[in-house]
Image 1 (cartoon, one colour):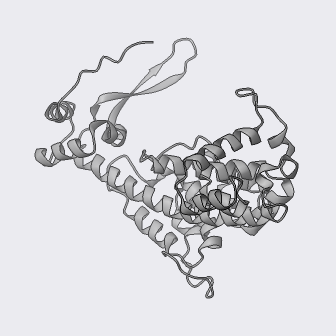
Image 2 (tube, rainbow, N blue to C red; image 1 turned 90 degrees about the vertical axis):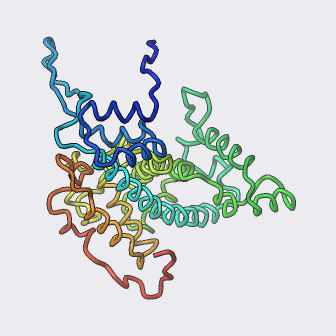
Image 3 (cartoon, rainbow, N blue to C red; image 1 turned 90 degrees about the horizontal axis):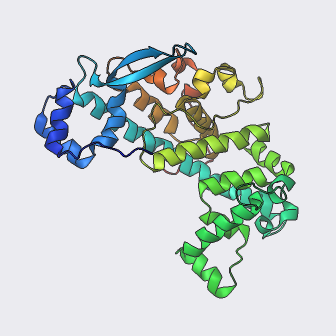
Amino acid sequence: MSTCNKPYLSFQQQLELLKARGLGMTDDAAALLYLEQIGYYRLSAYWYSFRETSLTQDPVTQKITVHRENEFCPGTRFEHALDLYIFDKRLRLLVLDAIERIEVALRVAIAYQVGAHDPFAYTKPELLHGAFTKKLQARTGKTGHQEWLDRYNQVLGRSKEDFVQHYKQKYDLLLPIWVSVEIWEFGMLSTFYKGMTIADKSAIAMKYGIPDWRVMESWLRSMNFVRNVAAHHSRLWNKNLVDQPKMPARGDIPSFDPLIGKPDITARLYVVICILMHFMDKVSPNSSWRKRMRSMIDGFPAVAHLSVADMGFPPGWKNHPFWQSRTSVCNSCPDYGK
């Protein structure tokens, strides 16, 4: 393993290095302040796309590889990277806004569905799927359910929530699922959903207008990946999805039909934004979230070489059914947070 040999640079030296590589500066003092407050390394994720490229070809396999050079494309300015950073920050916050609402609703749905079998069903293997409760994981020698319970006990042990302390004092450490679920992380929700019986998974999927529980299972995994990226303040706007969502069968959810068979779209953030809109129509139908997202996408920074296509947005995306204005979908539904 090699050792990193990059030298320590002061903020002023970082600024001079960027200028030497061709990054234009409108205001050196302002750029220096941003380097001090945001950091060179974090901002580098946003000026990476502005660096020049070169191609090399392997003489044996003939495979062509794209390399990013240190020099910036002509005309690139510090402000371009900063505008992209600010756009990405706003995008992360808006995505987290939707995921929070979906997460809260999903907690209730799971607790209601599984709790009907037994208040402590989440601890009982016989009430969950066999693959979750019987199949041993090679890494730990435990079942997926046992691993999940280990994680749950860690979360429970460090929880300072008043309702958890109340139950611990008045009853014992075993909380009914409608209490327990309130401390589950989104990843725990996703994993537990996967471990539920097919009947229970199907019932919850149908509640959200998803005919196939396998589709919902994959959607939750993709949402969890995006949530983790956003929650850790990492670059999101053009991120490749590590866990790509499964598309519904043609006609099951007609608004998704245009995305079927298009990996250049389903490997990028656009598809998750569409998934979030689908869920938001169910959990918060009167929300202005769709309108706010569209407005923000319309404000994508005007920089050369980059566009919302890098996020997976297809040509003519504004005409896609997801982006049509919807108001007063549910007159009787409360409007919380808009």
